[in-house]
Length: 193
Image 1 (cartoon, rainbow, N blue to C red):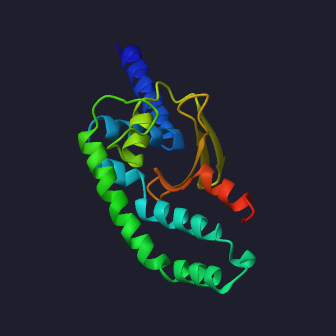
Image 2: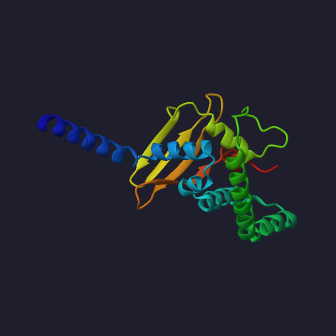
Image 3: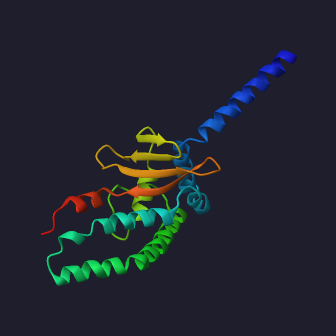
């Protein structure tokens, strides 16, 4: 009897340590995000996705793509200047819109739809549907360096991978802080006409 109790206690200890280790991995955060989308749990989703940081990083990348050095006339300079002046307001507006769309998508998501944005569908709902349709997490490539991680996620082999940057919080869980959008890289590398 004493031996059985010792074996059970040892098994519980091993399981507890295993859970502690796994719950500290960034991959576990993707599972929790998946679970929050599946269960329509908006609050849990926002615990693991810092929408303000994601939008801020997206806007910074988008504004880096502006051809400031290659403007050839006053109208071009005026357009770039106007865009830069509107950056703080645009961040606020996009953050509010993103939160509304994300909340609506998570609360109302049904079955995964096809991988193309159809009429009446928003890009955020389309991404949420694609993320929900991931059958396994084996197509997530992780690079972890200290408290920063980068994940490349490709829902299908034919789609370009999203690069997601995460930071580990003081409470050991990971939070998404940036999503690198492939089309912005194309804009940056395309010379102006």
